[in-house]
Length: 101
Image: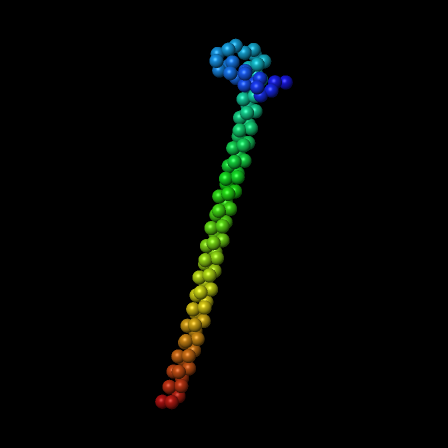
């Protein structure tokens, strides 16, 4: 069984125009395929990791937007309470003036 250094030597010999036996050529091609598969697997993991990070950022942004919207909604509810109290006060004053007239 050949190790990585053997394949690197075969690759070097092949790229420099050296002669390879049919067996060496097949093994070198198989090694190329396995290297490609390993590279694709690493790239796939990297892309998955990057995508996960992107999704996490998106979730954080959405949570922040939801928090801001919730706070704004609460402020509006508080303002509505003040306005309703003022309306009741004015309504009461109007009823008193109407009753006096």
